[in-house]
Amino acid sequence: MSLQLGDTAPDFEQISTEGTIHFYEWSGDSWVVLFSHPADFTPVCTTELGETARLKPEFDRRNVKVIGLSVDALDRHQSWAADIAETQGTAVNFPILADANRKVATLYDLIHPNADTTATVRSVFVIDPHKKVRLTLTYPASTGRNFAEILRVIDSLQLTDAHKVATPVNWKQGEDVIITTAVSDEEALSRFPDGWKTLKPYLRVTKQPEAPELAKR
Ligand code: BEZ
Image 1 (spheres, rainbow, N blue to C red):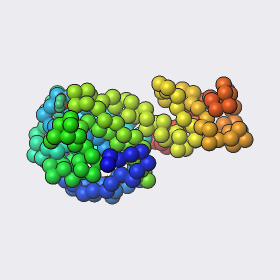
Image 2 (tube, rainbow, N blue to C red):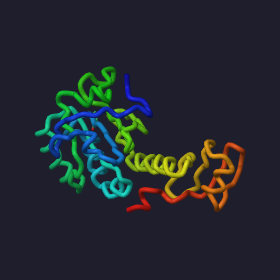
Image 3 (cartoon, rainbow, N blue to C red):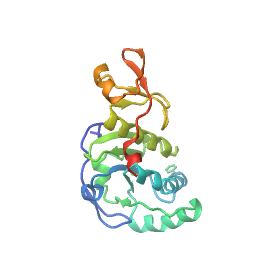
Image 4 (cartoon, rainbow, N blue to C red):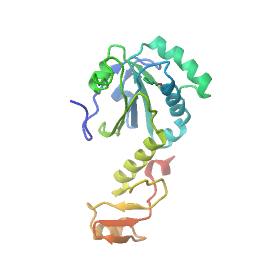
């Protein structure tokens, strides 16, 4: 069965472009974005890995480690990395798992046989420091992912954990947020001393509190 939100992300040991990864040890107390791509030397994947490398400072600011995966072998990852640097203008600066034996693909259910019997799908898992799965996404092979959206969700999750707020449709960093229904008006008084606007008892809007990880770095 596929991994669901709130499940514990499976631990694994697998080779990568940065040596053998012991997942729990490698991730430590960071958030993780684990993402799979269908195959090396493919155009959409090439642009995705370049963009992910370019965004490294943004992942670092949020205490997020990024790790890629496909079922290609290590030597293919290594020679493809040169193409990514050449065409995308950024060297790959995160590990890519060489999951040729499908160990991680099986644990994370990354082969969807009705889409492709051998290649991994274009999935994303956001995993929190407690190793819980907090976001899953699966895209078709022909559609490149929006990594700005992945950062946006991480910002939202980190705000929820720190401040018990939720983020409305199309929210962006710095815009107003919603006080979750788990927070009583009494608790809200101490959490949000600048107040809030009550549109409905279940829809209370307040200024975005400080983003916890962004404030630290
Ligand atoms: C790509 O990354 O370009 C791609 C991979 C598999 C199927 C289609 C496109």
